[in-house]
Length: 147
Image 1 (cartoon, rainbow, N blue to C red):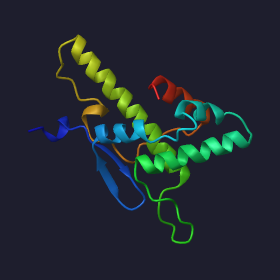
Image 2: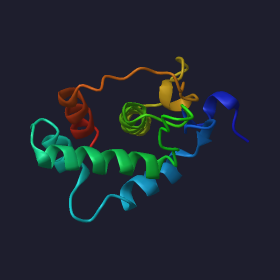
Image 3: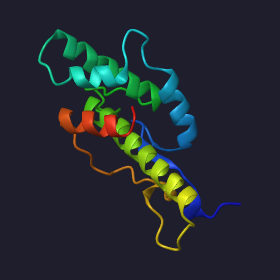
Image 4: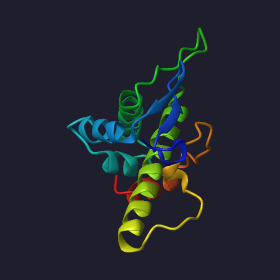
């Protein structure tokens, strides 16, 4: 049985409650649910432009993030749900989390494990972690993480 600090649980707010998700299941949904007419990486690059294609790409990414993480869309009347910025923030945070896990895993394969404190990959991820929503940094982070 795993100790709590060894469990790799990704936590986020879905618009109704905090979710503690298996990152492998999220990765499967992430890999299999992007609209066929485009790719996530291509759409991130389109965000740097100011035209109709950029707005369509933005909409696809927001819908995709909500679907992958099963988030409730923001409702202005009830003020419940997740805003587009929050949905994109969870997506960006998850991509960074997966990248950190890969680094940790490959580091352990190359060298013996240390007794140093666990990285964020080995701990529950805080749902309130801030992330930059600047389109350039998002593109760079997603590209660096292999998205």
